[in-house]
Image (cartoon, rainbow, N blue to C red; front, side, top):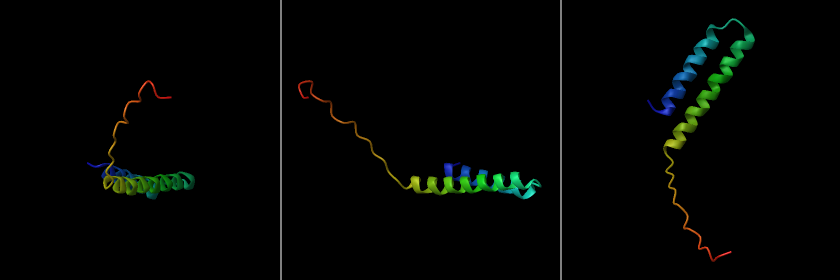
Length: 65
């Protein structure tokens, strides 16, 4: 399972909890959390297309200031 899929699954679970919740404050919190996980899923999708290459910088010569 990819990160994106995990975030989408969690968003769906939280959305279902929100729909089943009778307390308004808790319902709103579940909805907010579900939206946050959807944003995480979107970010994970964007990140999956990004290639990051790290190169170790050259060592500094001890004589240079």
